[in-house]
Image 1 (cartoon, rainbow, N blue to C red):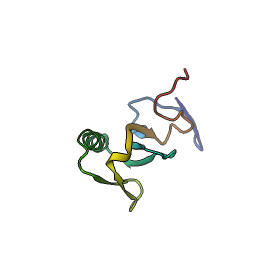
Image 2: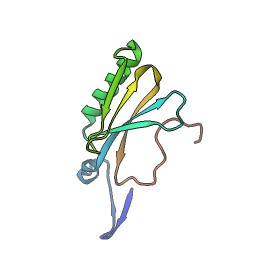
Image 3: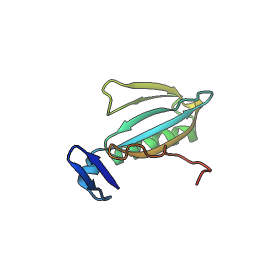
Image 4: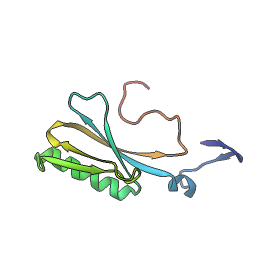
Length: 110
């Protein structure tokens, strides 16, 4: 991948620390009767994975009834959801350097 910026063009590799330091992990939830997903972000993959598993467990058990989520990237951003209204949850990495990439998820387009 090539990044164009004020200092010119440079190549990025998967193990490039500058790419990893800008990465955030997004947990996105699809809600019943809502065309817009709800998403929160985590700075660490382990924190994002733990939240993903917590939401998944709540979907399986139906408990807790309400779940409050906070966002690490945007201070003070929080939302409380009725677990029974969550249809799907996905976890993906969003790198600041990867602007213009295709939206994550599943599609039939190749």
